[in-house]
Image (cartoon, rainbow, N blue to C red; front, side, top):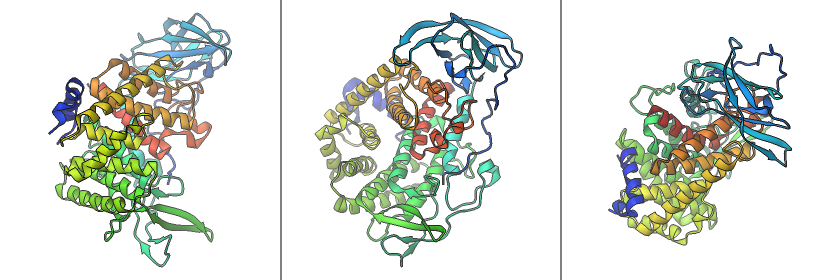
Length: 515
C-alpha cells in the first residue's frame, strides 16, 4: 500500500528532483472523560484573580516541552512565579521578556518562559499586578487523550444505532431516525437513509459536508498512520482495522444508501423538518456536486481500505465510478462544483489510472486559478495528485508543491509574528480558518520535516486550549475557562467539519510525541 513510508519518499524525491520519480445530532457532551482541570479555581491567596491577563494552555504541557505564558496588562511586572496548586509552593521564578505596547488595546504584552518546570503536577502562574492564571497540568501523554476524544466525536454522532454506556458514557442513547424518509420531490417514495453521522442538533446529514470531512481525516491517516490505533474505544475496536477507518466506514455505508443504484445519482442529504409538532425526515434532491463529492470520498476510502477488505473496497470504487459518470453528465457549471470534479478525478485517477479521468485533473490544474485561494477540496485533490503512483505531468506537480510550500511559509511567518504565535483574533470563524492553515502546514511539514513548523503547529494547539486573547479553551472538558460557559456552539469538537481538521493537526502532534 502506497502510504506513509512510500508517501514520505515520494514527497522527498518530488522536492529534490522535481517530480521525476512519481512518473510512472449534535449530541450532549460526555461526562468528563478528560479530567486534567479542576472545575473551580481555589481563591485562598492574597492576589486577586485576574486570569484574563495571564494566558496559558489550560490543559497543560509535556514535561520536556517548551512552556511559554503570555502576559498582557496596562502595567506589567518584571517577574512571575510558577506555583504548585496542591501545596501553594513556588517552584520557579521567571522573568518577563520581549515587552511591547499595543496601541489598539492600550496594553503591554510580554512572554514568560517556564520550560525548566518539568515535574509532573498541577500548577498555576502568579504575578504582581496581574493575579494568577488558570490551572494547568505538566504531564506527558495528555494530547493523546484529546486526540482520542476528537476521533470519538463521530461515534457519538452516529445515527440509527444504540450507543451504549460502555462506549458512549454520558451520551449513550437508543437508536434514532430508524424509520424511512420520504423524497422531498415526491413524498410517495420512501427510502431507508438511516445511519451515518448527525451533522447538527437536528440530526441532518449532508453529502458534500460528509465527503469533505472524510477526505480530511483520510489524508491525516495517510500522512500519520501510526497515530491511529485500533483502541479508540468504539464497538469495532480490536478488530484489526484502525478505528478511524472503521468509523469512516460507518459513514460510507450511509453514503451508499444515498445513491440511486440505477442512475448513479446521489441525493444531496437528509433534512429534518418540523411538521405538526414532530420531525419530518426528507431526502434532499440529487445534484452533480453531491455525486462528485460522493465519488471523491468513496474512491479515496476504497484506495486506503483495500488492505483490509478488497471486496468492500472494490464495491466502494464501483459506486464512485457510477457517481462520476452521472455527475459528469449532470454537473452544473459553478466554481465549487468544478473543484469537486477535480478532487474526484484525482482520487479516481490514483485508484484506476485511466487517462480519460487524468485529463480532468490536468485541465483544472493547468488553469492555475487554484493557487490564489486554495479550498479544502482542491487541497485534497492536489495532495493526492502529487502522491499518486500513476504517471503525472511533472510541471503540474512542481507547481502544486511550490504553491503548498509558499503557503506554508506565509502561514508560519504570520503566526510567528502574532502575539499568541497563532491567530490574531478568536471565535468560531477564526478557529476554522486557523485549523485549515494547520492542515496545510501539517502536510508540508510531513514533506520536509521542519522544526519551525512543528513549533507553529504546537503553538496553535496551545491557542485552542486557552492561550488566546479571550483565555478560552475551545476543547471539550478542558480548562477552567471553557467555551461552554460562554456559548456551546464555540467548541471545535462540536463543529462537524472543524473537528476533522482538529484530528488532522493532532495526528501530527501525537505522532511527533510518539517519536
